[in-house]
Amino acid sequence: SYLLSSARPRALALHLEGTYMADETFLQTALLGSPFARTSTPRGGPALLAHNLRYIDWPHGYGDPAHYWHSVGPAHASGPMVLSPQLLPAVFSSPAAFARKVDLDRPEGVAFLEQWDRWMSHKLALERGGEEAAAADTAA
Image (spheres, rainbow, N blue to C red):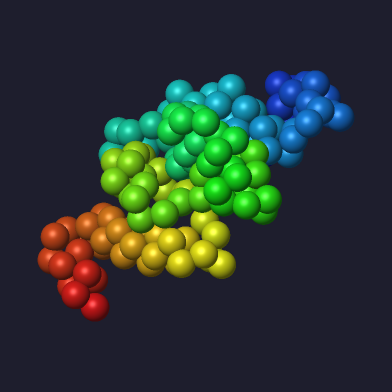
């Protein structure tokens, strides 16, 4: 009801009207500027995280991005790197719960997704029931 009845979110909506990608910024901006941003969960953690939990890697940190984009072809030109198993250590050490860009038409994309799914299943099992659940989930 805060988003619908408070003046601040309405003013933000008017400000963003007609801007590029307003639909991808409104909710996060409105909530992080709300009273909810200062609340906590029953465990004491923040109720809202100021992080998108998304892993995106750009080729600029690996040399000439034009060379990278040429190597992956026009379908991925000027975008983020296509994730592969070689990038898994960086992904796994990040706080990410989501990752892009995965190309399932490429073998390395399929391999990445398979390993990502195993890793995420393990993480979720740890949260649900500790080490025993994670070991059983990994064995399955």
